[in-house]
Length: 238
Image 1 (spheres, rainbow, N blue to C red):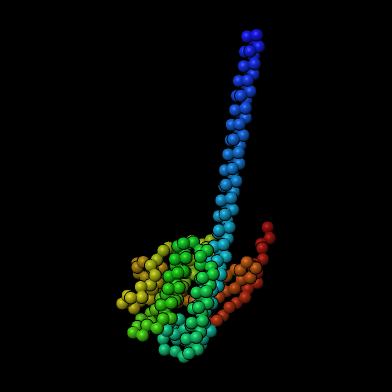
Image 2 (cartoon, rainbow, N blue to C red):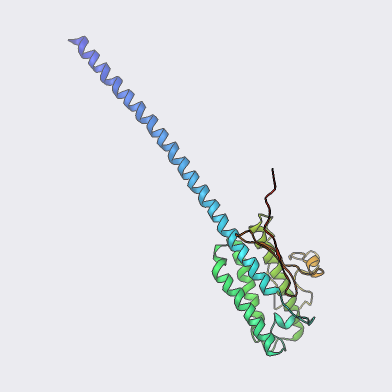
């Protein structure tokens, strides 16, 4: 009887140990599967977030290109960006392009990374500042404002392009100080100042850049209203 009881007790203990080991192994497998599922979900969310940011950047690059591209033969284009003495059609065109840029920002800027969204918001502030009346602002300051605005727009474009094409992100720089007394435009031959060096863009034809849309369509946005439509990229043969 004692031997039978011992055998029964041993079988019971063995069963409990086997069940415990099985439960431990099952829990370990479930934990591993749960962690794998969480990792896969996080990776999918990261890829989706990067896709949304890239699409938003593409749309804003195009909007920025439309804003800085003007179809004018007159070499003095400052009134097209800054409120200065000009004919009514120039005022209307400036305000129309500024409004379109702000609408694009309202639609897409929220999807940008915080750092680039801050740069976009600063650009919008500069646009608003330059289309405001400012009756007492000297014309010399307004003409510097014009170049400051275009240079900062190029800085923002390069920031957007870094998102769209996975290029290095331009460092963080303070925006142009509209209250400064210095005549040198922001971003032009900084000479150690805390500004990007956009001198090469200052002296170039100011091509705004290439935009690739989800459809595969590519466009080069340039000065003087020139927009060159390019064929879709053909995948390289392996």
